[in-house]
Length: 273
Image 1 (cartoon, rainbow, N blue to C red):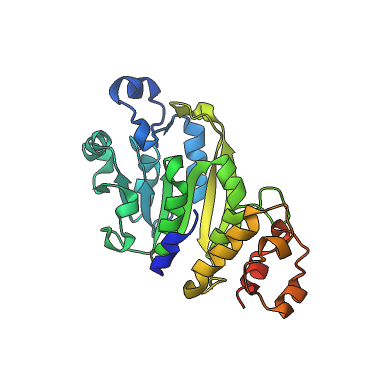
Image 2 (cartoon, helix red, strand yellow):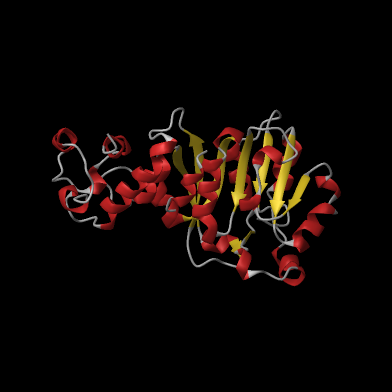
């Protein structure tokens, strides 16, 4: 994936919350919110539908409540965790023997170098403040994963999966949609976490487009056009994109009296012509 993409905009513990409160000091800087609802954990497993042939990569396993449900049902699994206390906990669990545990920041990891086969399937309860960097990380490593199920703030998930013409359709919907398909699987209330986040959450499924809508070498320009269009969301394109040299025939085809939220990703791509 072209390095210029970097310029774009852009766990769990099952039925043991009382133990967790006493045993683990939560780190706000790492955005730690652990799942405490067994029914929700089971729903996530059903949604991911792990297979015996799968190689699974988990981001932010926490105490391993989701890990323990998936690990016995797949060929191999790796987990990336930044908290050294949780690394220690995972490493001494006899039921997770054989799990590849990686201590570090997921954004600094190359999937290709993780000691399981690729392409992997990815699951993750991530810190919400790194949602956009995680998505960029996924785009940069398209060749090494098949699908991804990422938990994020509901509001962000709704923007990612928004349909053209709706109020949630945004720059994020467009610039990520060039490479990825997104599906909102289900939403999650705050009270199934400990500590409780202040927002609702959602599981978003990511899959890769067979062919990116915009070539890598034009992505930076594409992002600038989309950014300019949505920075003046209520204005017509002829005003918000006045600074771009877009051919008259394209303006005629698309109609520059329209507003940005009415353009599909494919129509935005035509503005590069």
